[in-house]
Image (tube, rainbow, N blue to C red; front, side, top):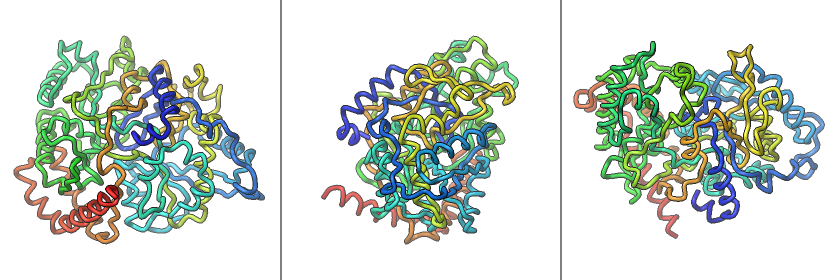
Length: 536
């Protein structure tokens, strides 16, 4: 992103000034969804101001639209059909020659269902990627992704104009594009956590500055809690620190800055690669989570917690700390009518340390190899960034029915009494967002979160591995095996349900048998080659 700032400094300065002046709706960082939080970005770029391409030379003759299926995690909004009828009418009016149908898969069934669709060759044309959950390289490893380089070259003018080169390059393997990143968030936000300042005040507590202070404060809050639902850590179980956001702890370690790439690989800024689960840092993380679990700060059912349950907890306002950003005024006021948008604060342990971007991009979209319409999928993504009007329709719905504009770039959602007093439609910034077009809810969003998520951090640095994409082809079987084994054997240890000292040796033995050493050696080899090319 720093390279982007250098290349387009004037535009970025405008972006930063605009973003700094606005408060916005935050998104739950983590495994992908933005929990319905909408946001506003910078002024339209020159590409966004231009009319969408409709001529034969670009989009071709449009005798009949090509119908594509776009598969996403989540629940279908009440007014989805109405909104996407308008989307498809606009696509037709603009001569794009594409008609889109979204297929929604419940978040907790996402991995299983998507994997089944890919393995059985079910026909669809576009699907969502969550880099912090299952990186696109994992799908590439299965031979599941189409090379969309030619389609981007022919039909991706707006994509290339509104997604920085250094971010777009992160979607390449072997020089070819296999995904389209969503440029919707400042990745240096990784490593912070949200805390309820109102709950701290109620308990006469100070903002914690160390992990031990955090646990102590949380114990006090738990003991004094009057609500019907305990303020457990709202999360699902995983062995991946980027997905779980236990990266908040890493700033307290002497070895920081480092990141964990693709769930298994510790990489520091000197280019050193290690097996993540065999590091002292992994052990420290697991011991912290063990303390949370044994003190009742994580749910006793943490290993079977579902995404919808964690989201429901945040939406209820019954939470104290969230690893990552979360919350909005409406949720806070459900059980605390006096709450304000200033009652959520952002905390960094050791804030004087560097701010590190572990990934080039957090979310994106890819075309499955069995799609018959890869160019149509790219055309749709490109069309969305052709104008603010197109973006608004896909993300916020029908103006006057689902939202109203609030100034130049703000928005206010219109709640539907027949939809639990929530908007009848809302898109997902994490799935399709772009900072050049995003709108903020200027009333209900959390200013502290907006600053972290949507303002470019000029002091941040990219991980040395941020743009590196591991190609597991040479260790495909082993990579699949360790992923399966880690989910079963490592996750209970990392989540603190099993004690590290008693369980890790057996789990490590299973991981070694599954092929961990071979995968790490292949990663090291490819990473060394990558670094050598960067120095040329």
